[in-house]
Length: 119
Image (cartoon, rainbow, N blue to C red; front, side, top):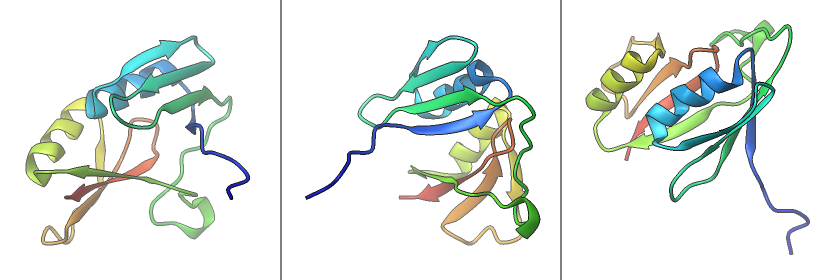
């Protein structure tokens, strides 16, 4: 029997509303909250939350001294189309060396790594 139930994944960032807007564009969700805490309600999926973190220092990928800590894997039916969309929304590619893999690595506008993964 589980001791707890996962409620929400929270990402620290300098501008919660802006980062929630980015992920709303990627995941098609509804943004709710204030300047300190914003929740993204995703249709048919778990919520994401974004918390203002003064002095936020984004992770670097790959870097042992500024580790990514965690990342999101987002499944997509078409890697090329999804890549075009996330780049238009403000993501930046982190690893473009091997385009034959079933995943691609990006940073969101606050610098958190995430992967688009072929489903």
